[in-house]
Image 1 (spheres, helix red, strand yellow):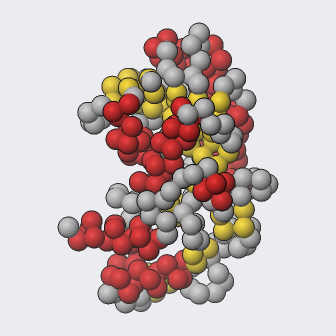
Image 2 (tube, helix red, strand yellow):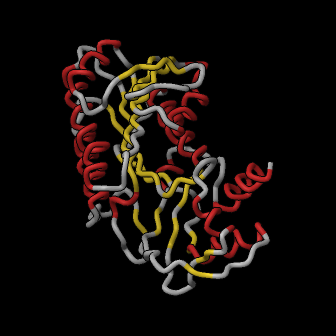
Amino acid sequence: MKILLAGSGDIAQRVALKLTDQHQFFGLKRQPVNLPHGITPLTGDLTDAACLDSVFREGFDMVVATLTPDSFTDEGYQKAYVDSSAALSLAINNAGHKPKLVIWVSSTSVYGQTLGSWVNEDSPANSATFSGRALLQAERHILGLPCAKAVVRFSGIYGPGRTRMLDQVLEGVGCPAEPEQWSNRIHSEDCAGVIAHLIRLNEQQVPLSEIYVATDCEPVTQHELCSWLTARLNVSLVKERTNARSARRCSNKKLLDSGYKFIFPTYREGYSALIEELKG
């Protein structure tokens, strides 16, 4: 099975590690350097439809798109998500050998701020931010493809190299108890695990849903999370963030019903492992 990693950063590389023995992986980036063993580098621009036409002559069976914008700006999101999804969609439609499955990584930020309400795959995606609108437009491009597709909306990703919350707590910065500010999180190992799980289901000819919310099993208020981390790290909080926003709580029921077993079911297991790694 030949799998194209459209964008081959941390999450994509973790996916390859989980499936390398059964598949051939090709990592497509503008500068595909330092890719681990098991991923064949391909040089290309995901916004360049002509380039992608050439790439798809390789005849890929699956595509996993994990893209990251260069900047948190309207232009950055337009290029990384909207332009890339449009070019990818065009190339796949033009390809003589179309992939059996396309997995596109999106974000729960498409839901906007819903003040503590629960959201799932059927909830309206009505984000008013430039980033949420770009993500949703990109999803529409992918959902129009003439093959099986799965849009995976990840919540806040943490893990090695993604330690912003830990760093803030170590600096003595916490979050107020009121108003409630909900946090939905998923460890990077589970991000890769979810993608590998969907690939395996597809190979077993299990029908996939077109959208999955991928988040761990316990949304938590940011105040509660900061308090828990404070106790584990043995530090004192001396100030509070003032720019945090109330947010939704995300349900992972559809993902659990598909048979996925979390490596880190809640923030407790995930951050405990991360703290031990940082100590080492």
